[in-house]
Amino acid sequence: KQEVTQIPAALSVPEGENLVLNCSFTDSAIYNLQWFRQDPGKGLTSLLLIQSSQREQTSGRLNASLDKSSGRSTLYIAASQPGDSATYLCAARGARDNYGQNFVFGPGTRLSVLP
Amino acid sequence: DAGITQSPRYKITETGRQVTLMCHQTWSHSYMFWYRQDLGHGLRLIYYSAAADITDKGEVPDGYVVSRSKTENFPLTLESATRSQTSVYFCATGTGPVYEQYFGPGTRLTVT
Image (cartoon, rainbow over all chains, first blue to last red; front, side):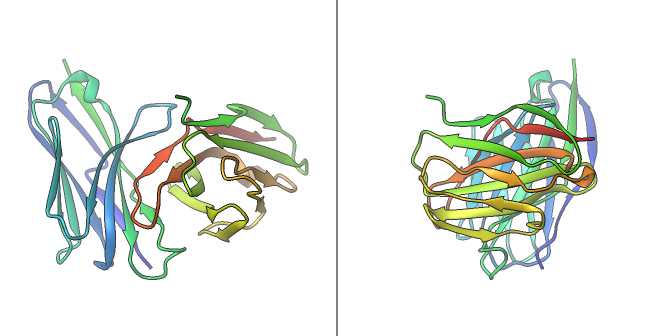
């Protein structure tokens, strides 16, 4: 059964810093991996989707990488801003028969960017 | 462009009552999903649907019923609500076999 973990559980950084959020998954047979942000009391907003054949995806100040062989993905945020404060979740979609090959979510990393 | 809407946004009900949470999408995405989000458990899949009239169980389906007679609607029914079903429920959609997921705003359900 696929399990997804995220380290650290919480992170606090000063504005302007570059930072990396980590996501690990136990079953490397995945179709893709998606990163989301969740603001308090809100739904999830899709940030980046990386297909299993890709090594990385970029959107603005965000860059997500994927290393299937090691079961890891990272989300890099450049020049962090207070508006980046949120919980960041990763979700791995399994290639094996795991609830219809649906996403398994990590617990999230709560990011605080201090002005 | 409304995207995904969920109703109600907040609901308080009593143990044993039947409750239906509604999910509506305007995109005509083929896949729809119901998740619950709980502290300590994260997001867990309850049910999903690949198309109208096609539904299947996720990780935590017990105590829930779904139907999908139309592509745009995917209601989730708690047949006899229990306190353990107090949670935030999210509906999501996806476009196909290798899909990105899009989430609704959520319904906060409290069972007393």
